[in-house]
Length: 106
Length: 106
DNA sequence: TTATTATTTTAATAGTCGTTTAATAATTTA
DNA sequence: TAAATTATTAAACGACTATTAAAATAATAA
Image 1: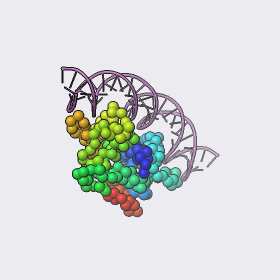
Image 2: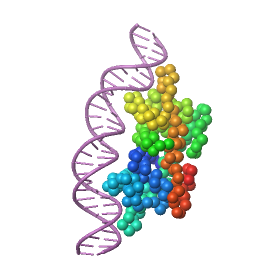
Image 3: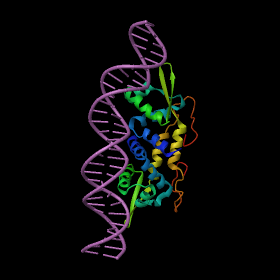
Image 4: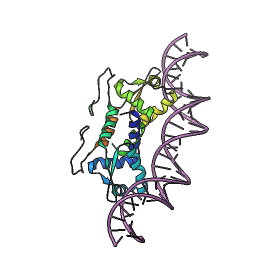
């Protein structure tokens, strides 16, 4: 994954409403949730939700599908994992004292 | 970790210069690197570096120590890992089709 | 077709962020 | 002490971001 993509993904998540949207979708798994249902749960206006969906979708962090007149959004776990991997890659590789990190791939 | 702290940490990393700083520090491990050396490697002015160090430090993602007239910065891996864990917590817990995620705790 | 529901788009506004320049602070060397 | 080095702070400016309200689009139901 390239750094510009990582910055785009981090920017998308670096906002309270979008982080809340993404967290709900992570818990939902691949079936996702309808736009309106997310809006209601988070007490955010539909127009504002669309604005934030666009940012998350542009970053590749969510995908959408139409079902009847509902639009379902779901987390894209592959992109999320690529982003997390980028942050920890080569962790402590240049360290004299060895890697101090326990969790996540280090 | 609270969502506001996570947003602060994500915001800190959601900028090209700061992401580059943090990535270098992740590779360095706990000994870290001097501010000036980072500035030189990234071709960023000292004033601009200080601005970005402040954001990363405020987010808890880096720590600093003075050595002579040098200031060394190092990544704070505990905060990084808490942030990563927040993003994947309860992944697919409400999913009918089970968890689709392979990497990272899911 | 007309009306209703669900979502997106557009335009306007206020607030936040990143870079530059110049000045300041802290530490070390001459 | 004076000069040099390393890093931070402050002010100014342009660029970007989030929210709101109103209008538009898309799909279904009456």
